[in-house]
Image (cartoon, rainbow, N blue to C red):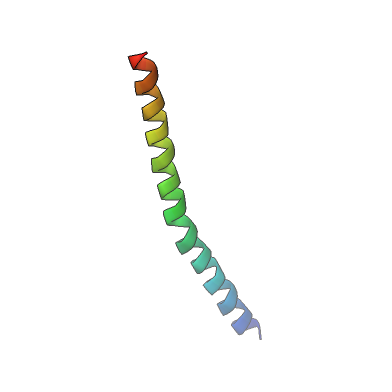
Length: 45
């Protein structure tokens, strides 16, 4: 029972990490480009 529970928890953690890592990576790139765009916009004005 304990071994099965540990396996399920490990699978859930792995799934969450695999699902969230690209999302956070794309979010970081999006924020970076948004800040860059705002900087360029204010620089042009």
